[in-house]
Amino acid sequence: MSNSKIKTLSDRMKDYESVSDVKLTKRTPVIVRIDGKAFHTFTRGLDKPFDEILSQVMQYVCENLILSVQGCKLAYTQSDEISLLLTDWDKLTTDSYFDYRLQKVCSVIASAATMYFNKFVTQKVLAWSGYANSDEPENLDLFNKWQKKMGIAMFDARAFNIPKEDVCNYFLWRQQDASRNSIQSLGQSKFSQKQLDKKNTSDIQDMLMEKYNINWNNLETKWKRGFCVYRKDEGIFCDTEIPLFNKDRDFIDKFLLVPEEE
Ligand SMILES: Nc1nc2c(ncn2[C@@H]2O[C@H](COP(=O)(O)OP(=O)(O)OP(=O)(O)O)[C@@H](O)[C@H]2O)c(=O)[nH]1
Ligand SMILES: [Mg+2]
Image (cartoon, rainbow, N blue to C red; front, side, top):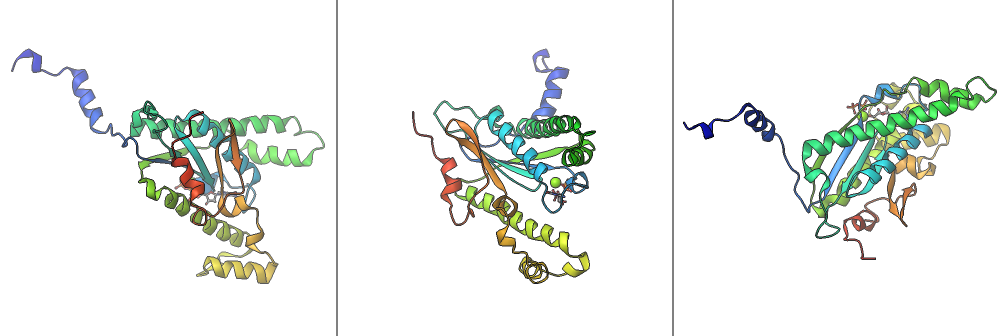
């Protein structure tokens, strides 16, 4: 064997690395789903079934991901998860985020979401701390609740390609999960595990109506369906009145279009 064929240590190590250096397919929609790690535990002590501050934190994370992730057109959030839609075909010259290197995309986005989440919580807690010893009971309550949550949230992220035709169905799938979770969480806040045993979402809605006169349909849209963040009129818009994605498919599909030239 000639010397030129002998691999250096560096070549050999790069060979190992390159085996898992997978790339997503270009010019095909990419979905990235970010999910809170063990949020069942993290959310202990927060408002049940829906925590307003948690939703504000998720909104902040979505806004900053839209701003910082190249090609990110839409963020949809519900519970402790965020789904991002990434495209790379605005122009012939548009680059893909990190050349669509899967490991880079997932690790940077999970890390960014974690950073934005913890940063916002810390800022909020610091703001409330000024009121912690004053006569502002509401802020004292928030301070006590959230100071235990400072800097400890973690997120995972997965990314995958999906055909254009199924992008709306992906978001519909997450939205249906949101509604199911919402009804179950509301049910769990009013009934025991035993009372809810073998009850489907329609049963739970009936039980809520009969016993508490609570109509799930009258909840704020964001608690029933989640909410979206996207670019609008040169800014970032948080849309808390989103439609059912199967009733208005254009709402999602419009993010797949090539933007009009200015
Ligand atoms: N109290 C409260 N809890 C919430 C709220 N939104 C989400 N959660 C909690 O977040 C959890 C999210 O569930 P999962 O993502 O399936 O479970 P997880 O515990 O995060 O576990 P992994 O994602 O597998 O790490 C739910 O079980 C809820 O307990 C909220 O507004 N208020
Ligand atoms: Mg989770």
